[in-house]
Image (cartoon, rainbow, N blue to C red; front, side):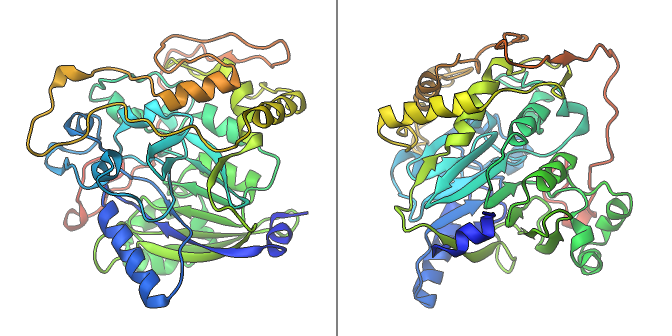
Length: 427
């Protein structure tokens, strides 16, 4: 039974999709609450496509890859502290403007604040029977095959490379066999403009035309995942414009509705409400059994250095691990993620945060609990290669090339009047 057939037999839920959050939770939530009242409807879930900026305090701003003049506390800290509560369950991925030190604490996914769930650097969860997957960051060919080598405090290079998509995370997502209903990426899949009205796009954004013609606008990794997963819905952000496409996949006649959205500022198209068929509830975020099995299997080859790796021959027997996960979840008695825990002081406008109060990597109890549940090693505070593999695994080949990986032309230069932030993609 394909995803469309499976969903059609259920009841519906309303999901709000938002483009780039840029820390402006107050305005996004206010807009949705107003929409609920005006339309006399109920929104069940909010999904954000990156640049969420989960900044808890001034120290987190040091890990946010934007020029100092753009570093602002915004409003996430209010939800982290408990001063405010998210009016809707919220799921988000990372983009290229994030408090990367905090997201690294939650590499495998977890509650960034009560009712606000980070999907992880790559991840899949369930919500009311809907499977939602995503990949955080943006694609850069020079870092794609490297491991996750960056550690806080970040230098001027690492503060950017930390959010570059890695092949390891993509390879884990490529192991998914069960249907995914919604997938989220920050940058667009490469070639997606072939499936929409790209002429209208370049009419509004003429500086995109060169990249479209050269087939360099978008992420190669996301394109591979789109071809593999074929979800009914795919949402992105990053380029600060709205763009729709309909992808007709070659095998099976499956369709993917693609939509990219803008950032949260007045008179911009940053929100979309979709209605999807779902189970009867409860509408709450839950761990995904298949994804937990993939996470457990692949943790033994978690790459932690700059050394390029080749995952082409890495395969695992999943059925036994899947049964193990099923048994563990049954014993635990719940598929809900482990509870939110604050790990650093919250922002307080009346006093300055002491820099010595916390530094370097912080072990998040959510992550520790998940890894203990999976019975795998905690590696987020380590550096150096991790070559331990189960006997059933394939080999991991490390490149012996000393030279740098050739950089793709994946940067987009906007005209000066549209430049707002300096980063890998000028936005």
